Length: 247
Image 1 (cartoon, rainbow, N blue to C red):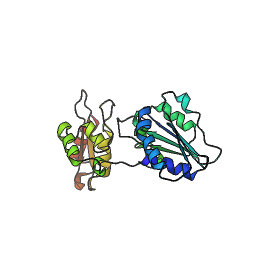
Image 2 (image 1 turned 90 degrees about the vertical axis):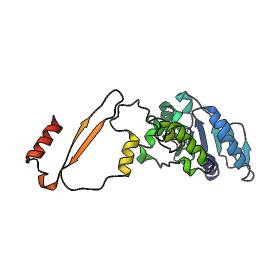
Image 3 (image 1 turned 135 degrees about the horizontal axis):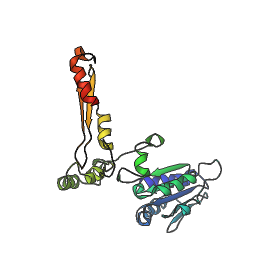
């Protein structure tokens, strides 16, 4: 629905404009996006010409749908001069490889719309929600926010897999899956939870130590809050703590 609305708006808003729609696999464009585009375009009045993988509007704008794994075949689309008439729509973006995203950037699109269920903690779609989030406007939709997903289905998935299972965190809670294939001390989802739910501020000095585990065990981070009266490193108690922290 979001993609169809964006495509039709762009075609009407920018005469002579171009929309390029792609996905990790062609059936996502052919079976999902294009039928929805045809349905709503026919309700917008005259001036629309519909093809299997192309839609044209009477003001000279058009939308193209295709999928490719060859970055070289994606670089032929460009906007005209300084106009804002090129929109790139990338569906199921988690399955689109980085070289395709690099080819998209070479086309210098006026705007990019990426959509996907969240996958693993890697790739361009993941980075758009993490270290490159300042370059995007991001939105997260959980299963509870979708009126077409019954609550019984959600409860069944949690009961079957467990609430903390990566698949449940992805398809129910809209989180990226930590698959255990990265050497991370603290996982991204765990970090985000801490940032969004910080502990209450307390006075006094702090000391800490870490125990980095291996073989699938949990890492340990221990933080000690010292009473204000012995917060200085000069006290015997704090000296022992410092020796323990520094080895």
